[in-house]
Image (cartoon, one colour):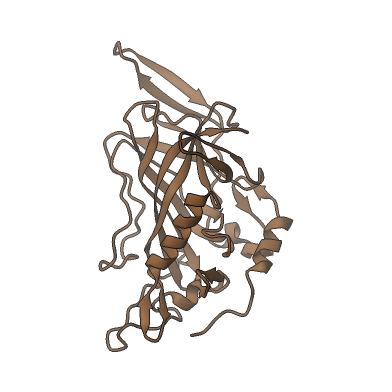
Length: 308
């Protein structure tokens, strides 16, 4: 199995040296990703929606991207890679996706990693609202979980566009394997972000962050009206080119992991060499020929107390 020689530490050093502007890093770290692969997810100047009160009268509501105290915060309590799957040679080629997912959720359960979605506000009756994805620092309790920014500069600012009657589907046709459990499609009432280039915090502490191109976030509100306690059928998706998938490496449960080295059709082993699996995908940018892989992360999230 081929492993990339560039170590994850270089990514972490690069992140420390760069700033986040409108939800996107710039510089050699992502090789001018926003300019080459797509647009950064950015902030809307104002989000305005119309809500219907119990009396049947309608009233307008608005919020700006300057998310203030009192916002609605949701910690991702379960994350699972739905596609691609990852393969490793343990004296025979094995699908180790469940091992990766176990590691991710073990760290979530212990509070080691905390992805947090912030809404201003999380109101399904609005047309849209500012939304931030951030790397949180959380104190996980039985009765209450409290979170704040782990790194205030590590934010992806975007917008949640709400849908009351149409499902929120971010799956790109032809980019999933029908033999795997499928990525979530969020039923209404749900939200969808615009697509753009973002950086995700590490899925586990031993891995570097991931740059996702054409990234999108969708999910279903746990209630059709505010307050909303849960987000369900969530999905984070985006494209990772081969050259960057080769740099996503570290240790998973004491085993060396390299994303491209474990993706079928990339540099992984094959369970059946006579019927090889190819989970790689063409580049969504028609001007670029480098292949890569679409990654689909299913999630659920629970409301937490947010302390800025």
